[in-house]
Length: 211
Image (cartoon, rainbow, N blue to C red; front, side, top):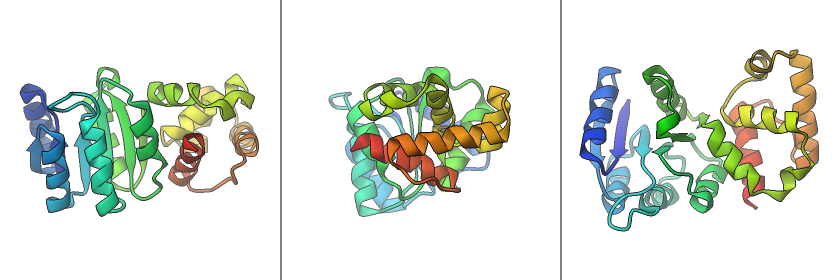
């Protein structure tokens, strides 16, 4: 599986290269600026990109903007954001694009190597990998979710992590039937049709919240 990495800190960039290589990924490019990232993505068309949000020269949102720009030219290019920050505007734009896998993890909340590697693979496979804190910050700015109950918000957050109904039920210690009812209520309140595809339903919710 071919990977492009964008990270400005040399030690972390080298660590990501070594880690992913150890898990049978092939790192085709490792860059440290937004311009270099966009060029690498369009040249290599990798199976997945692992991207930091803040890259030189301004250290604001170059990484995310470069990834979005590359996806405009190569639709469906899988992107996993790995950052210390939640960039509200561009995060919404990335996550609302329903073509290809997407993910957003916070560096200081990745608990294990296995969790990170699983997220990379999930995004490469067209899935979704979302940190609950990212979901929480995005939802907090979105008025349409005001109608949701606390439990429905919790279920929506787990949906955005890419979890199945059964996994959500296990996490919340409720029945599958109860989860299904919560999800139906969520879609009804947000004006979205239910879907059997976990990734598609999450992206549909995020797309609506981005509107």
